[in-house]
Image 1 (cartoon, rainbow, N blue to C red):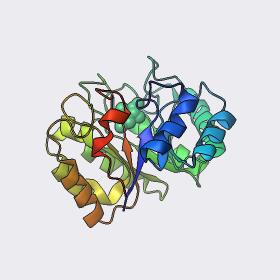
Image 2 (image 1 turned 90 degrees about the vertical axis):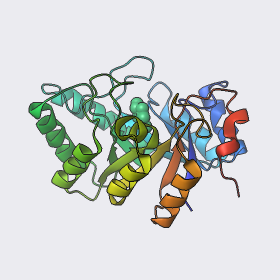
Image 3 (image 1 turned 60 degrees about the vertical axis):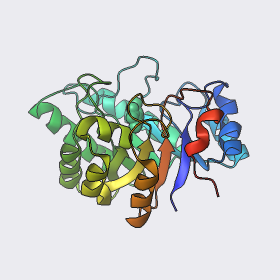
Length: 251
Ligand SMILES: O=C(O)C(=O)[C@@H](O)CO
Ligand SMILES: [Mg+2]
């Protein structure tokens, strides 16, 4: 069965970051992800994860933090040096945290040159970090205006073109609902490429129990299809985090 992780950038924000680890473990999560961990020394984050018995599942490149920084540079022509510098920093953090995946963010860009830039940067990154697992994630342009990678078929094409064992797809069911409408159909199309799954309710990006995505059916499809990766709760709780965890399957 897939294991569940809590996105500590968005869940348990009632607590300071380092206290969110124990709260996530107590609530029944087995792993955590942090979108941009770069404000806190990696050894402190690592200690908190280890003492809570949690696996670090994912971090994002690049360093600018969640509160307002650009969402990546990988598809921006002319920003290759910045991308490489940020990627190396993400890699150092991922190594220190033993993070399973690094999500490489494309940023705001458009057109053929952006696509070529993203492919060239990813081709560099998969060689730079042969032992790391890298992901790319289609993100909807309503919430993230101008974000380059907002199409599942484009992401699949890019992964095929790079053709590296350490690059895969990050499937966020909320973005799939926003971009495609039918989450299950999108999943069936790209499932073999998926390394990491994220979930939230739609509309609103709140608890998975709120809205029209049938998560029990989605979890069953993942199980039936042999998905063995993590499922990460990446949503803005509408209530106190713990009160809203009735959707979380517990043994
Ligand atoms: O917004 C999402 O969805 C993500 O997974 C983030 O990594 C984007 O910052
Ligand atoms: Mg996501």
